[in-house]
Image 1 (cartoon, helix red, strand yellow):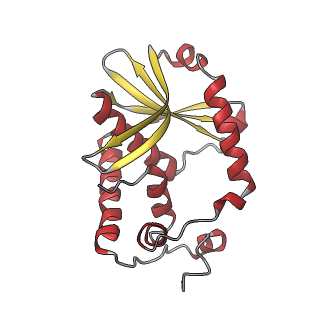
Image 2 (cartoon, rainbow, N blue to C red; image 1 turned 90 degrees about the vertical axis):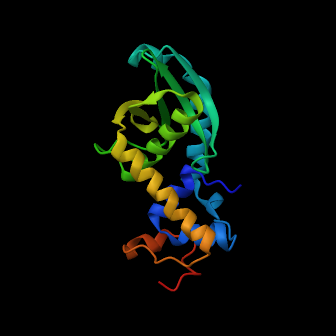
Length: 193
């Protein structure tokens, strides 16, 4: 069975052609050259070791799992979640570290990622997810709560279905309508847009 990841969904949101180039043509991105990506991954890994208990006290979780790899056969989705937090009343929530500054807004891609993580948690742990948390590492570990409702989960499922349309039919999707995204695209030399 073929699975996709929340990262691939985010790349699809950046431009649908990412999925075509990566998953249909099997052309890998060359993101390892990007300094901030590497630095962010290193800090991300360090935070997962350091912050074992602070979050419980701050938001009242009763247990947590760190660096959880979850799979949904139903959605054909797989992903690694920084932390799965458990609360009373059969509730759970994803927590994700972001190596970025808090800019007084939650990006659409972050909301989508957390909705996907929520679906993975609900299927694997049989717990209801109504919220998610982001920790902005470069803003003194600022903790932000995101409400996760049916609308976000339905949109996440629909986006996953759109991606599988590309994968199963091998069709070349339209590019992003925002041409300024092409400037930093790893596939800009392949794409005629």
